[in-house]
Image 1 (cartoon, helix red, strand yellow):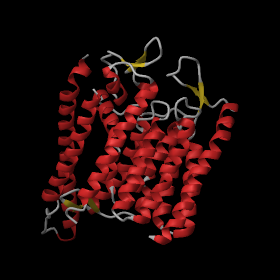
Image 2 (cartoon, helix red, strand yellow):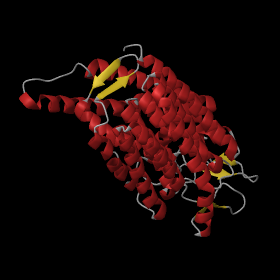
Image 3 (spheres, each protein chain N blue to C red):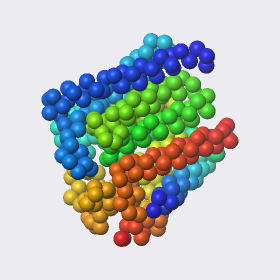
Length: 76
Length: 330
């Protein structure tokens, strides 16, 4: 079980690195123009929505991982 | 750097000795006033003084004021006020039983001093890939961060010595990361958190003489979160905190709502005849870190505590590796 916990911890760390990569490469250069002074606000709102979607995906992946790693122990 | 050494040494000494000397009289005071709770993991009816958050906040405020006297940084004020507000929220919860939403919502307000003093950047730094600018979203992140770190530390405060021991390892790991990043001022501001936790661990370790209570756990967690924001090391701080994050994640994903532990009907962990801890088969009980550690068989409270500390050391090492990875793209 303890090795499973270390594996889960490592998986979370890798997902953080990977998620960071997506944020920087996809969200970083993303910007919207043509709305005048509201450009920054609209860009930030869209970035926030994408970030929230990414967090939800991150949680779903972790839930699947949790079930996969701990299935035996949770069901016992 | 050299000019920071004396303030750092002074503040660490103050942090450690305020808690170390203040906690024994606080225990007597609380016991005299009957402010005690039963230690459910002991065979005998043992009553433990609570809340120890009073000595923890005294150590933090005293040491940060010493630092402020030397450095006069707004960062110190913002972190101290945020931490003190979290203590007050925890103290209210210690004295009156509040609903599950009280602490996350109230802690969001504790983050306001960081925003008012403007002691944050709008860049979120990630390892390997670099930084992303999120000026508007970052304010929301500040509010979430304090709430999450405060409640995460509170959720891991389940066994003798675990919350304070966990914070010793996590906060010193964070301090090391800040030193590696050459963010010396915030690194020095963070050091008292480790020393306060270390002094409190002396009385909190098994067998506990005092429990930190919500006031203590929220104080430690909120200060940790505030340091992460002010130091611009949010991702590194999250990595160092991973075992507690796992605990909260497992708990929330199994109960699927924000509730207090006391509101949960199922029992995740029970005792054997010789009073070791064992995982139950209760399907209605939440999955927690302790329950998963015990899935391999019964263990003593001390053994479970050390298993959590080993996981924290592992995540501390991952945090340091993450810090070095930050340098790749800079």
